[in-house]
Image (cartoon, rainbow, N blue to C red; front, side, top):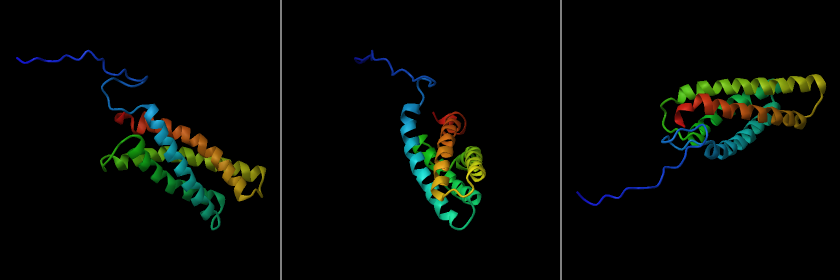
Length: 155
């Protein structure tokens, strides 16, 4: 028998809500990635909305922009926030991400409807301001849904 070294170091403690021995999927690591993707997705969404708005009404522009950006957002969060690579489960994750899309669509459509009622001749810039607020609320819901439902097994 050789001379064996015994480590006296304790493994790092798991963060709240995390079990020891699981891969690093901590909120502390995930939030910055989610935030960066969120900012880029929001800019992409707002750009799509702005362009679509020249051709269609606010609700249609919102639907188009949100649908396209939601697919890209889910794919980016799958890879960079939650560390999932490969195509296995991608369709399921997109379908689950569609729930977050529908919540975001409800919030943003509601803001546009309220704006239409309160200020029917509001400018596109005012519309974008309202959509930024709705998008912020939808972002919180999206992260929570992704963390506790869509990618829960990957933490």
